[in-house]
Image (cartoon, rainbow, N blue to C red; front, side, top):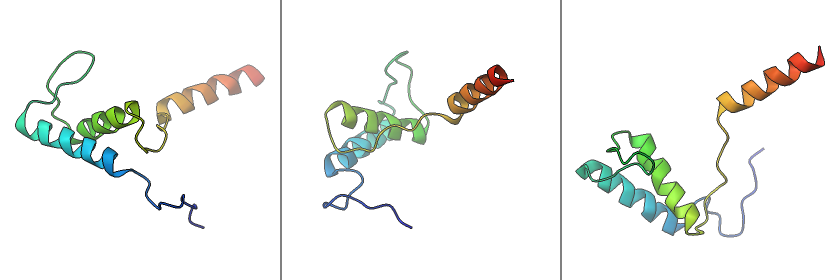
Length: 84
């Protein structure tokens, strides 16, 4: 069954969409830089992540960040080892 959405029906706000659009535009023109190292961003996925991160910081409507599969699997395996 599909998950229920809020009354607005949008998962991402228009402001968040604009942030992602801006980040993609900057990446295309070679002016988007990553936060930590300041290196030029080449990846499409990384540009989207930067846009969503900026939107979250400004308090726009964006779903919570998903934890990486790597983190989840490592915590499960260590927990299983302790039980044995």
